[in-house]
Image (cartoon, rainbow, N blue to C red):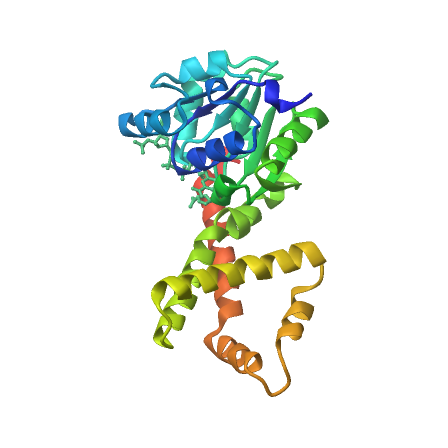
Length: 275
Ligand SMILES: NC(=O)C1=CN([C@@H]2O[C@H](COP(=O)(O)OP(=O)(O)OC[C@H]3O[C@@H](n4cnc5c(N)ncnc54)[C@H](OP(=O)(O)O)[C@@H]3O)[C@@H](O)[C@H]2O)C=CC1
Ligand SMILES: O=C(O)[C@@H]1CCC=N1
């Protein structure tokens, strides 16, 4: 069944919810009148209403009652409270999609009635421009059709892959948090261009387009990044000099640590009781 027929409700209208709403509307998955968002923050819901002309409310119950797909998009530490209040009202024919970092499907299921399907996903903010990266896993009441629905939904705003739940913290460290690392790299590259004399706007365009182009090369040629790197490095040329400097600076170690630390933080966020 196409997800175009569904009413989609968000509990929590923050940065990630906004990116997803924008992406879903842009992809034609949902029309604004079929979207509803609840948030405790007056400023946020007014902003979302003005931007998308969607339904807004302060009342999480209104989302739970009106939506076929309920996206849990609050911070991990408030999710328990939210579900203690409204979880019991969610019905088996609905589907719960949680985007909360670190929170297991088991923890969510304990706050819902038996039989309510729960899908846990880890998206990222480039969903806003249709280039999100999302991993999807299912709880015990969610079947293949729920997994397919989530893959279709998030696949429409980028690429979506199924993973087993024990890998979700790793996904959170890599692609969930990854846009932040990429922005730092883009900023550093732009700064480096400015240092070598380029105007800021041109340096930023060249840096971002280089990242986009390199990413597309990996995805569209399906070749190993090392092989693509070799295509850039002329013997005794410029790129091999730049690569030496990156190794001196420990870029690979820094990225390895970044993913490791974010993954560990995702595990911590849940706490033992939420796993
Ligand atoms: N940002 C990202 O790149 C990604 C985030 N995520 C996950 O998405 C979730 C949301 O993150 P993000 O959008 O960054 O966070 P935000 O803080 O931007 O958004 C959360 C929103 O929920 C509101 N809120 C707080 N309590 C309630 C409540 N009881 N009922 C309804 N709304 C409430 C908050 O209001 P107030 O600020 O006033 O408290 C805020 O507007 C998190 O669980 C995070 O782990 C997943 C992938 C990527
Ligand atoms: O920083 C965070 O906790 C969220 C989850 C993944 C990306 N941002």
